[in-house]
Image 1 (cartoon, rainbow over the protein chains, first blue to last red):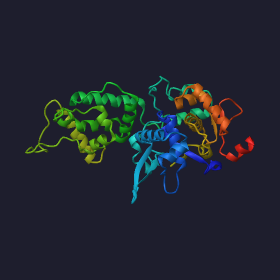
Image 2: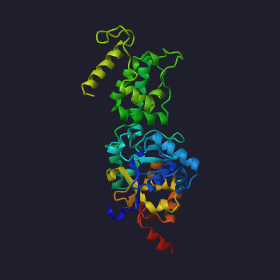
Image 3: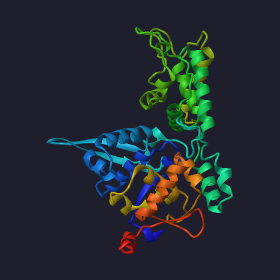
Image 4: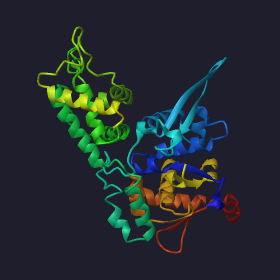
Length: 279
Length: 94
């Protein structure tokens, strides 16, 4: 290991194994890493594009997709003269100290979802295929598929189903398709929520909000994509969308009623457990 | 940050300006199968599935990587070695 010290560029393993990484994303991420210095990473898009051997437009697009995937954090910088080049942080370990925002894009080590372009088997399904080649492979893949892989694709499907159940009860727009981007975002939100139970509890918190069920001037209803937005979801788990007690009513004594009564009670129980630090 | 969280590839490859998107992606995938960051054992099919690239593309990229000198084939099929010492490559090409 020491033989290569200082002569390598590192690439986040979890992002590679998430299965959503494209060639241009990989190249741009490596190029960014090559700019890393003591003060951080802050190349201009021109410099980044030149280093990666791609157009500026492609670099901008790749950076945006990397930020969206949660593997890159971009921060604007400015000085007296105006805007300076952005500062970048690459998220290597979603559970590490510098990775508090990495959960935005946390995806499992192996995405078992087929590619949108071709229905190729996932790396997970490839395991039996490569097992016979070398023991190293088996060990490497097994490691990736176990401890580094807390959120699996079936969990994304489960979360999708949980949303539709909640949508049915709360009057939100139901989701029909579990697309690849949705699955990736679902995994990220699941990681933030601490798993399927957290996701369910978060949705239950919003279920009592009539605004989200279309009780607003525009008739807008919450949908899956709304909850999958990182900003919306953060607000949701912080309780911003919780049903506010109506004026004159005593919140502590009021009992929920109507078709969502059970949901309200469940949400209240969850909130209570959260307050007691059990969740 | 643990070593486990990183896949390492030679720095000089990117700085050489010879890196191409698919080639770099394939190199990362090959390196990800390594236990010591230098020697990898993996099939093209496994790389193809990890990179989500066709076998033909992977084969082409592997050849490009060998031509550039950042990758060497091992004694047995499926064995690869990443070359971190650029000087060695330059001297060999001279």
